Length: 356
Image (tube, rainbow, N blue to C red; front, side, top):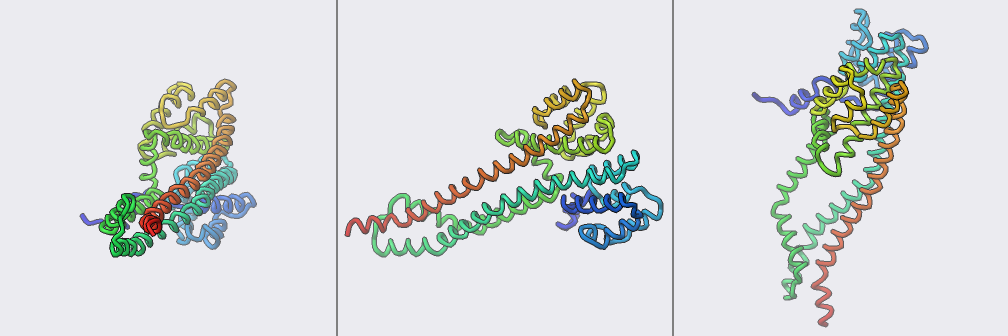
């Protein structure tokens, strides 16, 4: 059965479209403001379909037909394949009669995620530019400069030091397999792109990261950050903790769902949340401090709100520390590599100058 690459990607993302966090935040905040001001829902969607981020999402008229048929707003978003959390929150707002408040909570939630994403991208731009510049310089030296020096040294009959021989052998090997290496780079780049774009691949990578020393703590922080942000938003929207856990497994995807379902069944069967979350290994253990405090005071809703503030700031700090560490490490590696190439390339010249 022949399936095109585009069809394969569509199949992987068939359930939910890949809207950006900023798109979701803009659409939600604009819709909430119009509904709060008393604007008719059809006129609100018409406005969204003509301006800003909503123009890309609601450019067809399916929303008009659905609303004219008396469908709920959550049904419209489900038709446009919005995220599960988005749909569940809108549905909760419809049931509790606080729709636009739920939309404001969603806007705040996606604005926070967009802010984290933008910080990460901005922090990566400079190291990536430096790395690309150095890699281009190294390729130019290996492709054009080193062969000329090798021919020069042979013509002069100079003794080649071991480090220079190793450099020449490395250059010959890289040039021999440059097409295969380029193919590997393309495959890795494609895999990284698909990991960013396709939720299922990204979730499997996060699951694998739970078993890698040095990385698992970061993956647990990411999972915990998502958990507390989602639960906090649902609770702020009027959903009880018990009701929020009814569909908690639907907020995640990939292998982690099995552990989340295990935690869900334990909570719904009456086991304290602090014990249930401690029985699985996909969340940060520090979350238990917030949950135990909430259980002892009978204010789990406030506990998740406090945890949201804590983990949101923690994730910002982690990104900041990682980026501060990545930049000097990259510069150090690239600098040592360039220094090794230059010194090894010029060693025979130094030996020649000493004999003169």
